[in-house]
Image 1 (tube, rainbow, N blue to C red):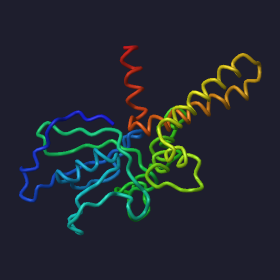
Image 2 (image 1 turned 120 degrees about the horizontal axis):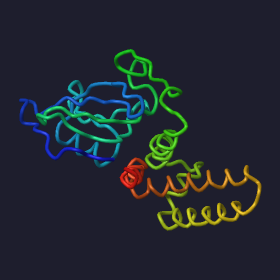
Image 3 (image 1 turned 135 degrees about the vertical axis):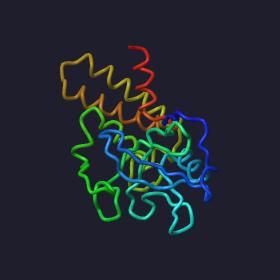
Image 4 (image 1 turned 90 degrees about the horizontal axis):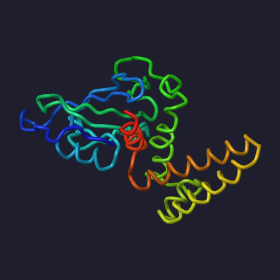
Length: 209
């Protein structure tokens, strides 16, 4: 997750709240508008899921805490005056409490959002991160997080060796399966280290500009 601002001026409003616009990182659809205070922004940055200050509940409210439809943060920025926040996120399901994809009634289905290339982002932010935040005894991914970074790193190494072995043979289906296993465990390792795949892509992009 990347931040492209240093300061939000929460003192501009009497209640210490600033509007936060949530935009789908893949489709650029505006999903919803909420309000944040300094504490909500800090929690959002630390946990990687969007948290607002609910004016009706008068408390911090993490989007999806009841429904499970979290908003996983890809990036945070602010307008030129430092009094409006823009968050680019990956939604885990419908954003609106009515069941609509957005709070503005626009279509933003998973089929539209997730192409072949962006599926890796989806896999990390919506599937793997969910297993980390809400572990299950039946989940293989949760068991990896439970065993810690040494085990996860070991699995990445093992899968890398399998890729090398299959690369020397002529069975492309087996080779693709081993590459898939390697990519999956690499995403788990990134999540364990709190590094978004987007950050790695940015490094690659910087090398080829």
